[in-house]
Length: 288
View 1 (tube, helix red, strand yellow):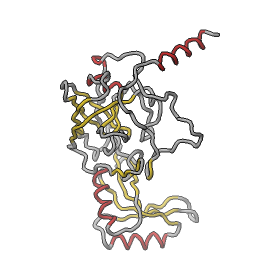
View 2: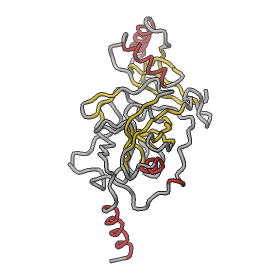
View 3: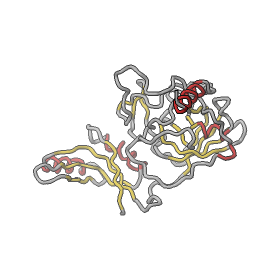
View 4: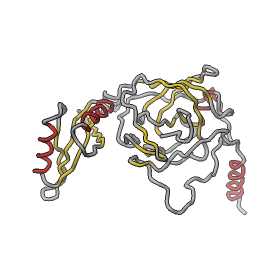
């Protein structure tokens, strides 16, 4: 047996014996109706290498863990379908999330989910300062305070959950270590959204335009008719976005643009009073 094989075997054995998070961690990538998650394959096998969640072998020094650095980020479609359904329960994302505060129990997730996709398609790392929340838009930055010891941490929400308990937030293992509750598994916390003002351009100079797309037609006359119908009852602009070459072009009827995610979600409620069909969020980025 080569040294490489021995090393891998030893690592697997040690990881399997690593301390387990003494909490119910839940499924980080459940089947989401109306959301962005991809259901597991029909093989009946778990997508995860480990059956149970736990901590990594190498303990982290809380004094070396650096908070997530809040910055302007566009709230894109990925991870932000609203409403969405998990395990038969419907969840509506918070529209006016700026200034949002919440108190409750926090848990953490680690090795089982390390390296797997989060709700917005990013890769989860237990060493990064991230979090999962059921109803906050993705991504937002949250200050978390451990009410038992006063320690604080800043995390970036890029995942959904926890769904199998009354806990309000699932933090990465690193964040739990920084807050001093990794060994206990849970802690009483207060979370507060940090306002990075997503309505302005992100640091790279990219500006976002938010639309509600209500329909797409191959015939321009049909798009024009719906545009006229919606414009008669809405105070928001109704536009037609055409793409493709003549003969195969698609004409998409959209309401907007809106300056930010919250404005688009508020407009969706107004639209639902006039338009019986469904609408979905479209985010375009550009220099204007």
